[in-house]
Image (cartoon, rainbow, N blue to C red; front, side):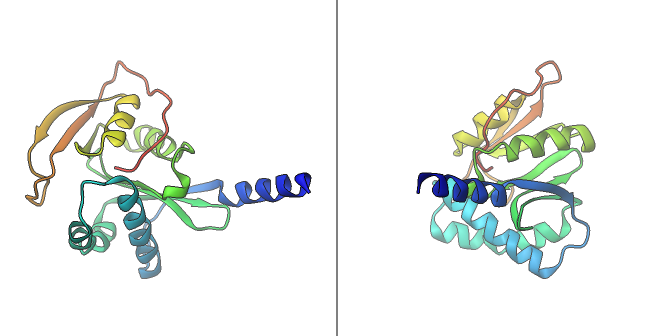
Length: 178
């Protein structure tokens, strides 16, 4: 009985393990819909300062952002399901979201390291009210260089702009969603 449970758990871990990260150029409506669902689950799990109304309003902009971001990286599990994604523009991480069930597995760290090595990432912006994401970025070697009281859409959600400190190699960290 115990061995059977262990085998089932091992099989489940294998299915959920990230097997690939791909840069996605062809962004189908199905993929965008999956990523919007992942975004919403991630935001609801980590952005406790947002109301339901805030989330619904912001959600309206997510499909267009996903379609237009210059570089979109998608991490998929063993069943080819997206479990995380990152959007990159002009050497900046514009979005990084990990499915709640996959937080703490090193996916965010892997995506950030990949983006630094392959896309020359230098900056990231993070909601100040998401201290887990701020701490994660700091552990990855980013430092705050600017703060605004409002987000890019003029809403009252302070943003921290962070730059990669070249003298501080990335530390290991588990990733909340930004």
